[in-house]
Image (tube, rainbow, N blue to C red; front, side, top):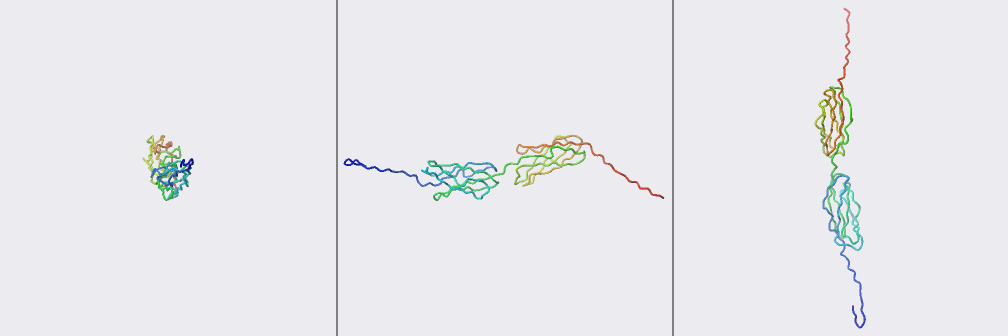
Length: 219
């Protein structure tokens, strides 16, 4: 202020931002698979002169993992928040409280689609007219039954058109019928782009030896 009669005075004025509050946690909902990650964005109302630490909490726990807090750097309006799917289900991630405000996002975690991992044994022989078995394995296990298609490359070996892996299980066994001499490749799948194969060889029918005992009577 001044000059007045050769004098003046000055004062420094610091303009402070408004107290930080939470504006959003976006997207407000997201879907991901078990083991996958998603990135959310936490936004505050105004850039601050210092870092702002915002607590994070998931409810229920165990569905996804998230950091215990997110730090919005000084001079920034937002910060990314990475979450990871742990088990199938839905959970709400809450950011805050921060000066009486909070923000939420709902995360849905789905199980990975099943794939065919093995068909065992990979090869074996059956005599004509007999029945063997094959076991198909899928991963990961599913909450619902999983139908796996089955095919044979030759009519000498007969299999069902499909086999069902029960909910919560990883394997299912199906019959293999040796109709005539020959060889066939049995394929389980395709299932979500995956399949497994086994080779079955039908050998000649086994000879059955029978012993007949004849008893003699003396008259």
